[in-house]
Image 1 (spheres, rainbow, N blue to C red):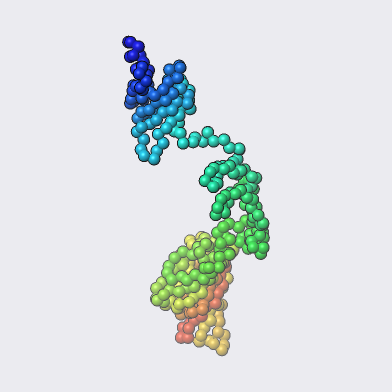
Image 2 (image 1 turned 30 degrees about the horizontal axis):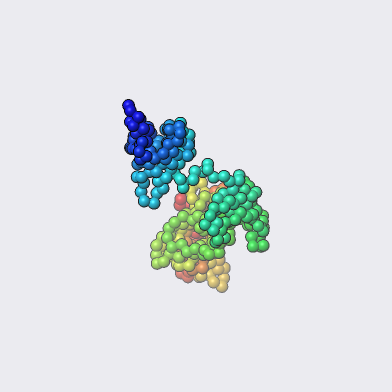
Length: 331
């Protein structure tokens, strides 16, 4: 091969113009624009960025990719070596190229990046509408560096111990705090058959209000566990097709307590009869007449032990009907 051929193979033109050639690590033509004294490429262009670990490109070699779409950088720099190249897009910053103090983060400030120390012990990052800062929780809320949050007081009214004491005497869950403190849904109207749940009904006033007053409404209590949960039911709509309160299953057939039934026919004499809960009772029925169910009648149940419900209440029997026990074993 003559001198001119050798120069062309190296990407050099004896008349000063660059020469295209296919080089290792690419699938297309590379136009070599400049080499150093060791014949390593200093500047080249093409449609295929050389593959990593390819030899022959000087450290710092610039490569222009002519095949990129508009808006995408096409200038690459070899940050590897002349025996093993690694072309990195100029303008794209790798994580390892950023020098930051331990525990710091990059934060945009007035259009430029600035380091923010984020390692303050038990501090949190907070935005203020303009920028972000690292601050400690203040006043009645504290947090450890393990993420444990402690609330000392709530609006200077209740201590954490007081909140826990109201909710369950131990450690209050979010659901318990919500159930105790949320005043937006203290009255719940029950219009159809369904399950009674602690989260939706405990501690609330449950109005028995079947819209037409002529459709059976069966309400199933949760499992009795001794939680102390209270459920109070007040009749707001007379239902001639019965309001029925039943236990969760046959293991819960242990009502204790009684219901007082007022007889309108006996007003002025002995107008009330007490009906104690019999053994194995699992159902309370308010039928609108003999067993109660008039507007204003009420039944309260308290979960006092595993499979045991305490019940009390006052119901009324209209004139012309004889009182009867609302308790039965029907589950």
